[in-house]
Image 1 (cartoon, helix red, strand yellow):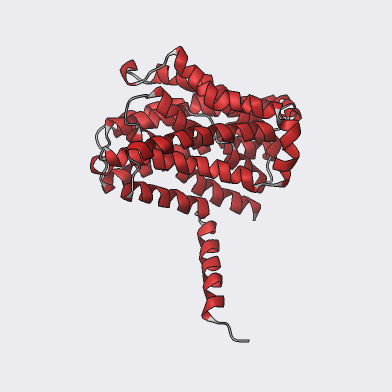
Image 2 (cartoon, helix red, strand yellow; image 1 turned 135 degrees about the horizontal axis):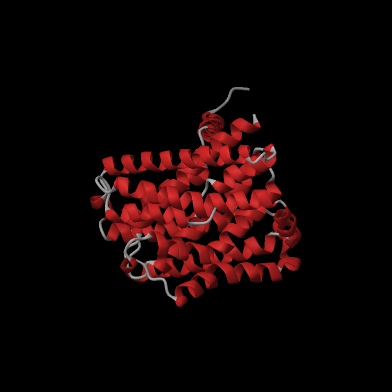
Length: 335
C-alpha cells in the first residue's frame, strides 16, 4: 500500500528525533530551549510571577520527596561500603570543581558581566545531579547503585556544604546572604522533603518503581518551572541587553572547557586509584555534573532580593552542556 502524507509525517519526525538524540539533543533539551524562548516573549509579571514562584517552590519540594520515597535505605548502606567511589565523587564535586571554577571565573572578567563570573563560582559549589547521572551510568553499564548513593549523598551534603563553600569562595560577602535562616530555608525545601519521602517509602516505593512517568514529569517539570521563573525575572530586568550573542558564545566555550578539564581529571584520578570500570563510569558521571534542580532554588534563597537571572545563566548552560556531552559519551560506551 502507498504511504500517505499523514503516514510519512510521523516517520520523518521520528527520524529527526533519532538523529538529534545521537548528538545529545532530546525532547527535554528542546523543552528547555522553548522555555527560555517563552520567558523571553511572555515573561511572568506581577501576580502571575508570584504564582509561578509558589508553584516552583512546591514542585522542587515534591521532587525531593519523591527522591526520598524512591531511594532504598539498603542501597544507601551498600553504596557507602564502596568508600573509594563515594570519596572520589565528593572530592570531585566539592574540592576539584570549586578550585577550577575559582581559577576560571577571573579570566572572564574582561568579556562577561560580573554576575556571570559569580555564576561560574556558583557552579563549583553545587552538588551533583541525581536523575541524569544515574541514568547515564546505567546506560553505560556502570555501577548504577553506587551512582544512586553518591548523587543522593552529594545533594544532601550540599544543603550545608554549598553555602559554606560560597562563603569561602566569593570575595565579597555583601552579595550573598548566609545566615542560619538560609540553611533552614534550604533544608525545608530539599532535606526535609527527602526525609519525609524516606518515611513514606513503604507506601510509595512499589508504585514509583513500576511507574517512571510521574517521577520524570516532576523532575523535568520542576526544572522547567524554575527556568521560566528565573528567566522571566531576567527578561523584565533586561538580561538580553546585558548579554550580547558574542558573550553567550564566549561563556559556552568557557563552560565546555571547564567540563572537559573536570572530566579529564576525574577519569585520570579514577584510573590512578585502580577503580574497576563500573565504578569509574559512576565517578565520571556523578563527579563531573552539577544539579540544576538544587542550584536554582538555592540561588533564590542565598541571593535573596537580587536579580539572579545572570547569576544562574552559567549553571543553566552548563546543565544543558553536560546533558549533551554525557548523552553522546554514554551512547558510544553502550555501543
